[in-house]
Length: 338
Length: 261
Image 1 (tube, chains in turn green, yellow):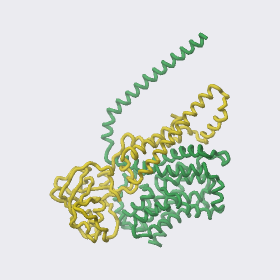
Image 2 (image 1 turned 135 degrees about the horizontal axis):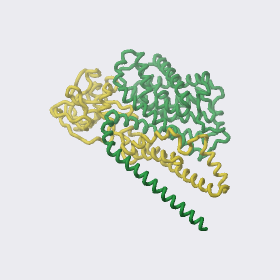
Image 3 (image 1 turned 45 degrees about the vertical axis):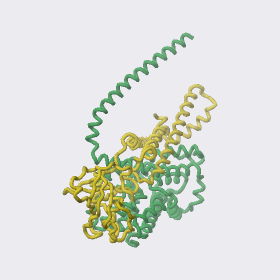
Image 4 (image 1 turned 135 degrees about the vertical axis):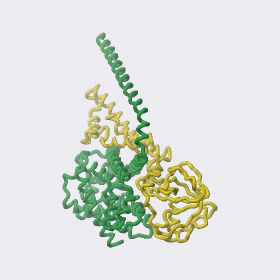
């Protein structure tokens, strides 16, 4: 009994000493940090907080804030698919033949009223649910470009030019379908790294618990990459002034390629890009169309999100191929329609 | 921290979103006004998710402590189930994915030092922006002695309106001050469609006796004056439009620093 009592006393003493050491060391460190920060902070802040840096922070937080609701919508849909929709629903809905499934999945993009942040998690959960990657990728590309919200925004931005809306719909859908077919024909499974979270369908949990867990995980994961993309977008936004565009308006070919490149680096949300395109005076309609077709399918924010979800090997291959196909298809549609 | 990582992150992001959308109007510096309800919903949902994650973390700790004491308790089976669910093949399942810690950057920025609205710096870099539209007649302006008009609206009417709807009207507009190279100064306003990344600029040159003492760059002013025709409609010569100021008044930065479309 006494031995035990002694032991508790010794234990208590040890605990007290340890706590004191922690408090002293931690307190001293905290004090040192606080002093350094309070002295150096204002000096550094004044030197580093130039207008350019302030603008960078504003654009950076703006892209991130703007992405949060859409990302959350996307992860809610994707977690719901993962937790509540059994696999056989998709195998029944989509034809087994991939060549047929791709255009159907592409056209199904109409139903997800969000911008591009929402479509990546949804496409990934579709793949986990056994949808052929080619079909899920067609959906991934078409959803942010051809949903009703985006098309209405386009018609408001280009009043009296219904052909612009039609052109956007056709060129985007064509790009999505062609990319799906290209993947079905040339794509390799090993490029695509699906999240390890998948178990075999039988053992994976379903129901509310899985929904909440999936939602938390997917949002945090995609959110991290959204921040990465927002940082890249803000950097280009500040580093590349849009006034340099005037130099290139002379050649229609150069201007089309330039706007297609600009769509990648500016990362304008697909619901807003029509207004930005409309404000780019002096560019040919085909160039503006290319801006609107490329933007929702390939941009820095999206590449970051895809790299996080499907792996880097996939994101770079897929994005560069999509960029080429999107440019070609908007050139053709622009030449035909506009 | 490992156990509560997800909870901390979700609460932080949710708190930041609610701080700018529900508890203040700061969100207007970053995104368009129509996004507010979605921001409030997302913020609340994230807080809720964060609380769920925190509760789960706590319960898990209790389980582990429990497990230490009685090795083969009744909770054995349940524990296993929990573990399997948490494991999911992720090595970092408790703290959430590591990349997610990047979310602390914008979240802490919004909570502690909300970045300012874009101002003259961004305006000076996007000189060439101009609403692209054809020449035509515009809808009639509402009647009244002094008419409040947005800088963007004034610009497009001054440059493209063949009906000259601005003629003979007294107009009042608010914006921040930018300076030209040769002593001219402008009332400038940025227009945001979705978020600050797509800001476009419109500006109006201010002339008149009142304009002699030009205000400081980036200060906000409300200018009352009349339209001065300039150049041929729809051409570069008509831009930027001019306003003859009768009164220039310094004002505070408005809650919504950007123009409405």
